[in-house]
Length: 213
Image 1 (cartoon, one colour):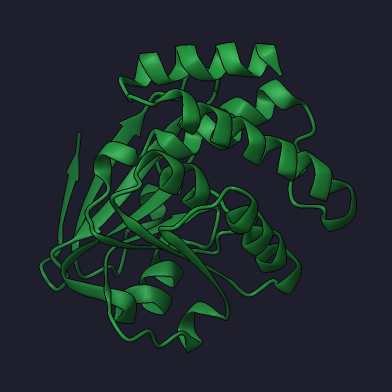
Image 2 (cartoon, rainbow, N blue to C red):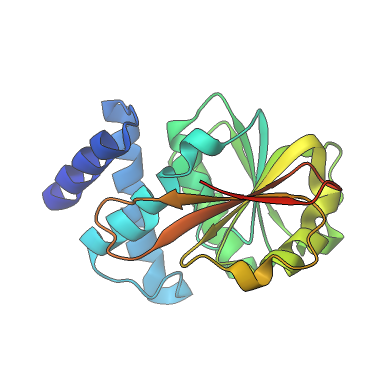
């Protein structure tokens, strides 16, 4: 795990994200939990620890500066990505992790308990059926669905002046049609990830405009 620690520390420095020793330990323990549960629950196809540190931890944390709080929901969280790494490094924000897969939400609940995270809750439900008491300033998704489908299924969860952040690989320009909102494309450079990554930010619902950074 020493190699993972070094990769994580250098990656966080490259991303200009501060993290204390306790947060680093928690992030690495989260990787251990994924490894342990992956044998039975098939949480991720990635098995190499260093690849997981880059593709799961650093990829998740690269979006941290773009979050708008205090209430955030990660829809289609799967193994708790990006929600758990973000919650570890942003204890001042509250995270709801939502997924329709019962096995994965059981893992996420166990990870929350073992990591003693006080700012995270998990819900086993389909996004279109989820009716929380309060809406969210940020909706975030990673490998969930196309932009139009995500927007349609999740927009009822968005607070006034809230934002939807969709983590993507290549710039998905063909997915922008029909989204009645401001859409921004934010390129991401993720340390240790040799692939194109970008963050699609949807805001100003009902005021269509497209921008690229």
